[in-house]
Image (cartoon, rainbow, N blue to C red; front, side, top):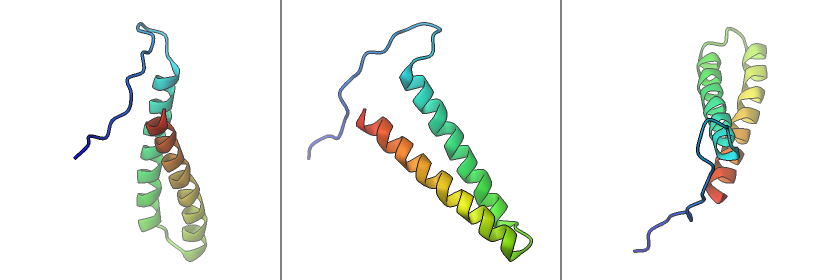
Length: 74
């Protein structure tokens, strides 16, 4: 069975933030937002509020997945 892995990419060391750091920071924020919207959906007090939260949840969830795929490819 072959091992799935990405080629190693050298990134600058030090205190400066690089593209990899920014991508992982964005992914972490999107994952947290997805979790928070999930909680909000379970606690929505009426149908209109639920529908609005669901639209936002779907958009953020899609963006989170796209960000993950971008990081994995690179």
